[in-house]
Image 1 (cartoon, rainbow, N blue to C red):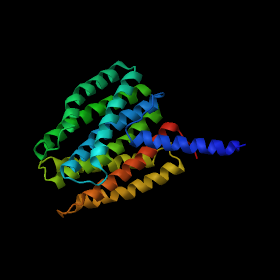
Image 2 (image 1 turned 90 degrees about the vertical axis):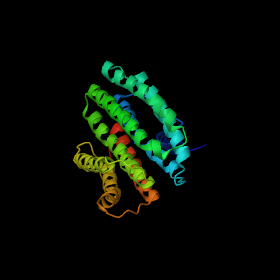
Image 3 (image 1 turned 120 degrees about the vertical axis):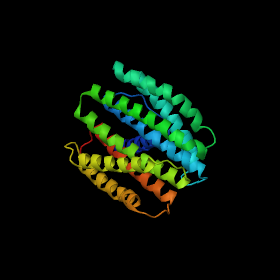
Image 4 (image 1 turned 180 degrees about the horizontal axis):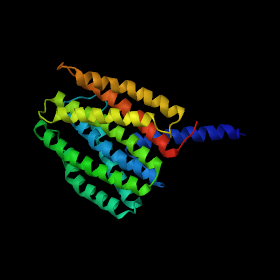
Length: 266
C-alpha cells in the first residue's frame, strides 16, 4: 500500500507543476473564483500587452532566443482566454464596461500581431498596444476598487511590476531593432522610475512573508541590469540578455503576486 503522506506529496508536486504551466504556457487556464484572482489576471493582461510587443520585435529581428514565435502565439491565446474569464466573473458595471472596451481594442491589434513583423509598422503597433495597456490598467483599477481589500491593492501593485519588466524590455528591443521614436527614451525612463518606486512600496508591505522578502531582493538584483543599461551611453545591446533579465523579473514577480493572492504564510 502506498503511504498516504507520499500520495499527498505527489499531489502537491503535480498541482505546483500545473500552476506553472497555467501561468506561463498560455494554453491552459482556470476559472476565476476570488476577487484577488481577478485582480491578478487583470494585471497579467497589462503585462501581456508589453510582452507581445517584445516578442513581435524579437521575431522582426529574426532572433530565435526564447522561441519568440511560439511565445507570441501563446501570449495571444492567454490574453484572449483571460479576457473571457474576467468578463464572466466581474459584476461591477464600470469594470465590465472597461473590459468590453478592451475587447473592442484588442481585435484589430491581435490581427496585426499575427502578421509578419514589420519595422515600419512597429512604432504604430507600440502606440496601439500602449492604448490597450492603458485600458487594461483602467479595468484592473476598477476591479481592484470593487474588491475593497488591502490584498487587492498590493496584488495590483505587484502585478503591475510584471508589466513594467516587459515594458522596459520591449522599448529596448524596439531600439535594438532600429525603430525610431523620440518618445521611447522618455517612456523607458518613466517605466524604470515607476518600477523602482513600486518595489520600494512592496518591500514595506505588512503582507510580506520571508519568501516574498527574499524574492523581492532577487528582483532588485535583476533590475540593476536595466539601471546600468539605462544609464549607459553605449550603443551596443544584447537582446538575449535584456530578454533574460526581463523574464527573470517577470517570473519572480509572478510568484510574488501569486503569494499575495493566496495569502500564504511562512
